[in-house]
Length: 212
Image 1 (cartoon, rainbow, N blue to C red):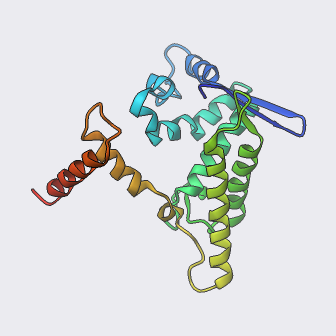
Image 2 (cartoon, rainbow, N blue to C red):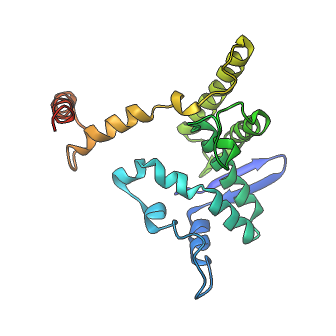
C-alpha cells in the first residue's frame, strides 16, 4: 500500500493506494450517523516498526466491510481487489468444518466451487499486480502457498476416505510465528536477537511457561 498497487489484465486497469483508504475513512458517514468503518484507524494506515508485522491490521484493512465501502463509493475495481484478498484469507484460515455465516471460512471442500474460485482469483491477482511498477517477493510466496493448498486438497480428495474437507489453518505457520513474536518481544527494542540472545530468551519462555 505504501508504494501503491496497480492491477492490469486484458486491458483492465485498477489501482489501490494508501490515499484510497484515507478517502474511505474520511467519507465514512455524515455527522450524527453511525460510523461504518469504525475499525479502520490510524494504526492500520500508518503503522511502523514491529507493528507492521501484525497480521490483524492487514486482515482488518482488507476486510469485507472496507470492500463494501469502496463499492458504495462507486469504486468497483478497488472493491474487487479488497474482496479478493479478504476471500482468499478466509479460505486459507479455515479452522472448523462449518462456519455459521461465511462459506469461505468453512473447511476447504464444503463449498468447493466457491472456495477454489476464491483461491484462483487471488493467484490471478498476484500474477497481474505490481507495486510501484515492480513485483514484490511476497507475491511468489502467496502464489506458491495457494497452489500448494489446492494441490493438497485435490490429492486428499482423490485418495478418498471420510475426510472430504480440509481445515487450512492447520497448514499455516501461525504457531511458529507466535513463538518468534514472543521471543522478539522479550528484548524490548532489540527485536532481532542473535543466537546467544535467542537461547537466553527461549530459556526464559520455557521457565515461565512451566511456573505458576
